Image (cartoon, rainbow, N blue to C red):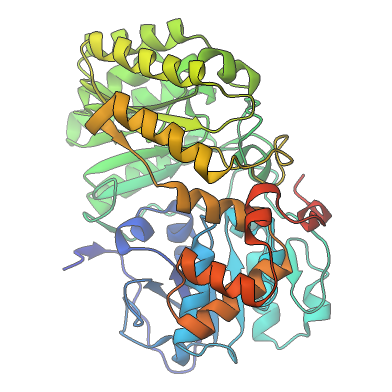
Length: 475
């Protein structure tokens, strides 16, 4: 039982049917604010019926319909390996004759998608997505639609400009589709701000959500009050890349505190910066029952400064002691390894830092993954470290940190690197592999790359020589 609320129900007959596909598990899909906003945005139009799919089923969550029954297939593209699942779904359900559209953060490099889908939407949905969908509904030619801001038509485009609202005053649904199976539980997701004022050199989000924009406090207050009154949510999650920079954060916290006097609910802040933490925010989180805070030191102090995350270990330790003092007992730490110029001393410094935090009395969990260079970042020309070296570094971290360490693994990083800085050939490889093998494992991809005379290792290490994503303008 999904135990969902605010599912949209419409009569199918006479409507343009859109399949909104999140190529991952239901738990991940229902936790995504972008999917909730797009589902709401599309279903505001009476002539459209948007239904949701996940990778776990070939039938929609709303009516149990099959993908082939829809007029337009839309894929959310959050993480590079999602492309493998998108290719699998297209081949398994024979969607080649269906109009297909992809959007999401990874769409900032649309070239690996050219062989798989008809359109890539680059930017934030509220800006120009409906213009594109209306054009598809009207049967307009790709050449015409390619002139729209944010639209990359696979058969007609070689460049595009990202579309985004200049002011963050866009609709934010108060009664969002939700489920207790979400990562956040039954939570109202609040889009507090977009963009980031910091300058981390490795971060893709810095480019794809720029410039920094804040949602007005009055709109947030209205959404919170309506959502909690009508929706009965058990939690509110403050979604932002840079929450502590929100200029009216303390007023927002006061509003939440007043509401909690009338109704008990949890307050959630998925990720925070150690160098910009607001003590009142931490206290509000603790008072609402939050026991875990997520922080991202990324690396040793020396390397941290070099990649643009300029705060010392001492600051992080001060924050952890504060967490302990106000009643937050667990901290999750995100690290990268395999950064340029990294040495064993940097890894030893990570281990030492984790030990010092544990001595502060906190229960610690560590997530460590290889550094993957991303397009549209100042570090896009760096190399992915070779897998043999990364394997040795991960082995060291596992030995030193033991059971508190989790990782997505080296294969995942390899695939991310090959796709993120890929070109049309990478898309062709993935599609042909899906047709030939069905299941897209790294072994199958390598086998198919050899058959196609492609050097997949070179793509993972350095990316496409052409660097086609540079023809996409984000700001």
